[in-house]
Amino acid sequence: MSTNENRLFKFPKFTDLIIFEDDNLIVINKPPFVASLDEREGGEVNILRLAKKYVDDAQVCHRLDKETSGILLIAKNPETYRAVSMAFERRKVDKTYHAIISGTHTFSNLLVDLPILNQGNRTVSIDRANGKRAETVFNSIRYFNHYTLVECKPVTGRMHQIRIHLATQRAAIVGDSMYHGKPVYLSQIKKRGFSLGKDQEEQPIMKRFALHAKEIKFEIDGKLFHFVAEYPKDFDTLLKQLEKFDS
Image 1 (tube, rainbow, N blue to C red):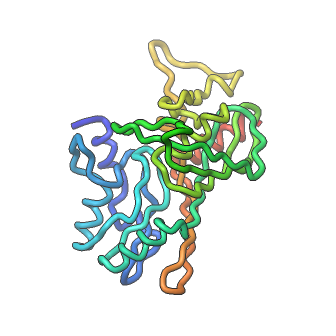
Image 2: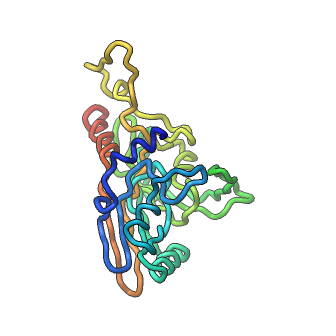
Image 3: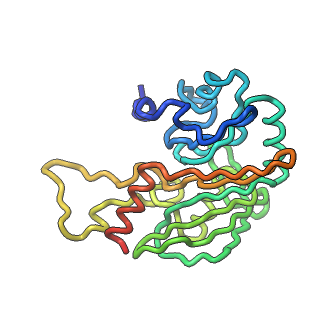
């Protein structure tokens, strides 16, 4: 069993992830390190399989990267799945993510509209000639000495869109090694009173990239839905450490 799979069994059961449920829809706060759908390399635990154990006809309406936490919509029946999918396709879903990025960046309704090319094997690139339209709006929320908490609002929904768009602004998400984001270590921000025991190796404060699907708004059959997902423990811990030692 892999390290990630070992981690999975420490997470709450599926019902503890639910932040909203009615006859047609389930909304969960997805933990990090759990895939949204079945992965090519296999693995038994993912949100789709957990949801189907809860409701036979459950379908995940969109996906989050495995390391990304936050709001995920799950339809209980085919009709709701089609309605939500159509809302995504028509760009009628208002999504808000929060990310912690390296450096102090003042983003005020910054629109990044660089086309993204899906190269396969979970790899994307910016390609103005062959890429598909991709737009994200960024706003800085909170500033630290060496980091920034940023609101990210994707207009389109390309793979790795927020991650690569931030990287083009020299503002990579901390811990996102694919796009040259470096993890945050306590020794970097706590200059005094930090020490490790003999033969101990320091671990980053957050062991994944710092991206969280915070909020979502959409409408189905004239009914407006609006959900907010709390930060998971690791994201919240990193913010508190930055507030304490990097402000």
